[in-house]
Image (cartoon, rainbow, N blue to C red; front, top):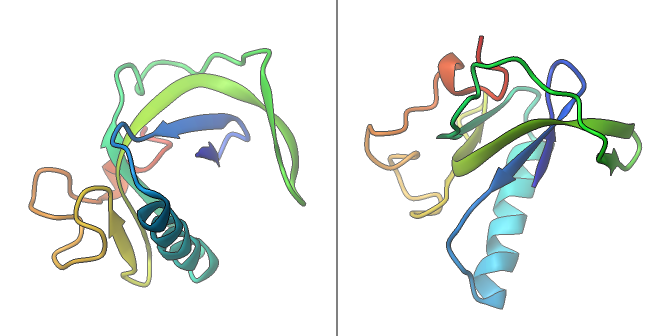
Length: 116
């Protein structure tokens, strides 16, 4: 998944586990609901070097209806996605409550893509 951050650069968000076709379709549907029903999207995950300056890269990604933007050298291992309305999807536990599951990866302003 590619995410356009607040500085108009692209962050790559990855998840390492494999899904069957039905699980993949379910995840896309639930994440789509979060994206379409919120204006503030939060992504929880782990990234090494996320606090270092962005590097504008040569590769680009096109967001339909928004335009084409450069990568920023950042990759996040995906754990959860949520919006300000409380809709949440956990990479390993789906939308079961609590979401995100457990307290290891809370979704707070510090887990935004644009961590200060």
